[in-house]
Amino acid sequence: MVQSVASLFLLPAFVVSFHSVSLPQPSFLNNVRSTTLLRGTITDAYGLPCDDECAVDKFPNLPDSVHPGIVTGQALRDLLDHAKENGYAIPAVNCVSSSGINACLEAAREMDAPIIVQFSSGGSQFYAGKAMDNKNLKAAIAGAISGAFHTRTLAEQYGVPVILHTDHCSKKLLPWIDGLVNASERFYKLHGEPLFSSHMIDLSEEPLEENLEICQDYLKRMSKIGILLEMELGITGGEEDGVDNTDVAQEDLYSKPEEIYQVYEALHPISESYTIAAAFGNVHGVYSPGNVKLDPEILGRGQAYITEKLGDKAPESGKPVSFVFHGGSGSDEADIKKAISYGTIKMNIDTDTQWSYWEGIKNFESNYHDYLQGQIGNPEGGKFSMFYMHAK
Image (cartoon, rainbow, N blue to C red; front, side, top):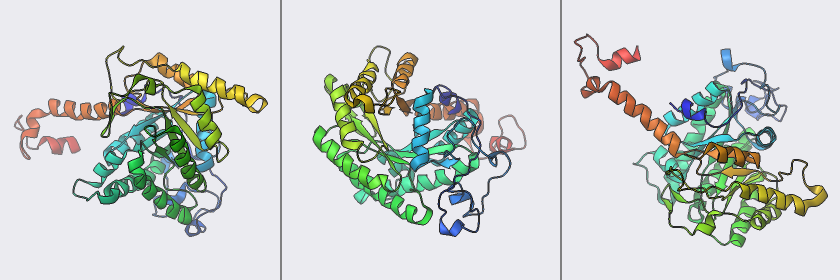
C-alpha cells in the first residue's frame, strides 16, 4: 500500500543489484566473504546469504560504492551526490512498526530505487512498546536500535540500498541521539561501519550560534565513524511527534542565504557529511491548497550566495550544499521539482504514508467486515473462516 505513494517521489528507475566494496572486513567475516564489505554484516553472520533475485553482481546506474543493505560513510555521500547530480530526491518515510519498515522495503524493491527508513523519538518509543519505561529516553533508544537491526536484517534480502536515519531531535532529546551514537560506535568496533547511516539534530528553536556550535560537536564525533549529520535551519511549521509549531512567526519559516552560508562555514571544514534542512515555508501535515506557501527559490538563492562567496573554489554545479525537504506530504509537484533542481536530495513524507498505511487497513476491514466479527465463522456458510482462506 506504500507502493502507490512511493511512485510519487520523482525517483528514476534503477535496476537493483549487488556491488562488492573492497574495504576492511570485520574479523568474524574474514573467513566467510573476504572480498565484500558490509553487505554481509547481517546475512553472512547469521547464515542468511542472498539467493535468487537479490544475489546479483552490481547496481547499474548507481555509484560503485553503493550496495544493497544499509548505506553508510563514503557510500552514503556517493549516493546523495548522485541524487543531486541526476536530479532526484530519495523519499524518507517515518516508521513506527516492523510492518511499516517492510512496506518501505517492498516499495523500494518495486521501484528499483533507494529509500530512507527513519525513526522519530516518539516513533522509536512506540516501536519499543507502551509497557517499556521511557525514563532517560530508554525506550526511545531501545526502540530505534531494534528498528535498525530489523531494517539491517531485511534490507539486504530485499536487495535495495537503504539509508537508516533518525528524524527531528530537539535540544531536550539530545540524550536520545547520544544513546544511538553510542550504539553506532560499538557497532563500528565490531563491523567497521556505524549502526545508523545518519541522524538529524533540530536546534532551530535555539539561537543560531548555539545551533551551529552543538552541530559542530556532533559532526566531529559522528563523521569519525561515517555517520552523516542533518541539521535544521529555520522552523518547519505544523505539528509532528508532539512538537507544535502551528503558531510560529511566518518569518521563521523561511531561511536566509546568509544563514545557509553560516552553516556551510561552520560545518564544511569539519566534514562534508552533512545536509541542511533549510526552511522555505515547509509545514508538517497536509493542508488545503493555498494554505502553505512554499518558496523553493530560497534554496536557489542560498546556493547562489555560497557559490559567489566561494569564488573559484565553488563547484561547477553551482550547488555547494545538499538540502532536505521537510513536510513533503501534500506538496505541489511543481514545488517539489523546483526544490530538487536546487539541490534537494531527501524528501520527508510522513502524513501521506501514515494515511496510506491506514487506508489499506480501512479498506480491508470494509471489504471483509462480515468475516471480521468473530474468530471463527463464514457468513457465506463455508467451512473455513476468512482468515484461513486469506492465508491460503
